[in-house]
Image 1 (cartoon, rainbow, N blue to C red):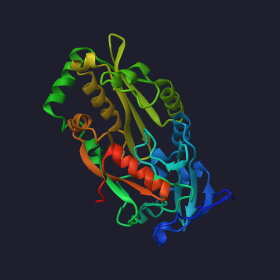
Image 2 (image 1 turned 30 degrees about the horizontal axis):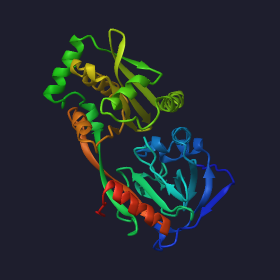
Image 3 (image 1 turned 120 degrees about the vertical axis):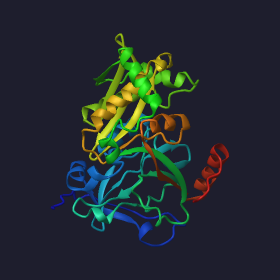
Image 4 (image 1 turned 45 degrees about the horizontal axis):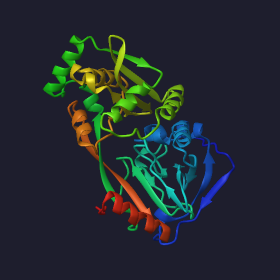
Length: 343
C-alpha cells in the first residue's frame, strides 16, 4: 500500500540517563497527514485509537490548555504517533496523561498489512521533558520498557466481541429489575448532539467535588467530537426532563464509555440501567472488537459496569523522571499520591 507523506522531517534525541537500545533511540521520520494515518495505517484497529485521532487530541489540548499536537510519523517502516502534550507548569516540562484521555503516549503501531507486528511505546522523547506519564492500551507489551520507567498497573472494564454478541445475557438480577422499573417509570432514551451540562455538574456536586473540566469547555470539546462523528450522546428522560446521560466514543473497531452524569434524585427509577442497556443494544450491532467501559479504578463505577457483564482487563500507566527537576517533581507526586511500586 502506498504511503504518502509530507516532506517535513522530525527528530529528537533521548534524555540523559536512558539506557541504550532500540527502545530509546532517537525518534525520526516523516510526518504523515492525519487523514493518511487513519486511512492507510492501522489506527482504526488500535485499542485506544480514538485517543490518537487528530480531532480528539487537538480539541482536547485546546480545552485543557495544554501545549503540543499529534504528529503522525513513520519510523523503521512502522507508522506511529508522536503525540506528547505538555502541562504549562512554571520551571518544569511535564509530558502528561491528560484528563479524559483513557490511553495516551507516543506509539508506533502495526500497519494494516502487518497486524502481527504489534504496538510499541516510543521512549525517545525531546530533551526538554523533565517528567513523563503515559497510559498504555491493553494491547501494548510492557516487557521492553526500560528499567528507569516505572510501571503502574491499572484496570479497565471491557465487554468483548463475544460479550457484545450475547449482550443482555449476563446482566445481574438487580440490573434486570432496574431495567424493568425504568420501563414502568416510562424512562425515554434518546440521542442528542449536545452535552447535558447540568447533569455533568450534578454528578460531581452530589459528592462535593468540582467537575474536572468546566461544563462549557467540555461542551465545546463534545461539539467538535460530535461534528467529527467520534462521539454519540444518549439521554434518559422522565416526563421530558433529562435525568441521566452517557457519551460513547466510537472509532474503528472499538467504542469507549467516555463520559456520564445523572441526577441522584432519579437513581431509584432505573434510568441509569435502562440507559446503559439500550446503548449496549446499539453498540452490539456495530460488529466491534470490544466496548471499553473505562472507569475500572473507582470501585463503585467498576461494580456498576461489571453488573452488565463487563470483565476486568489490565493495562499499564508508565512514568519516568528524566532530569533532576523531574526527579524532584516525582518525589512531590509520591508525597501527594502515595508511593508507586514497579511491577
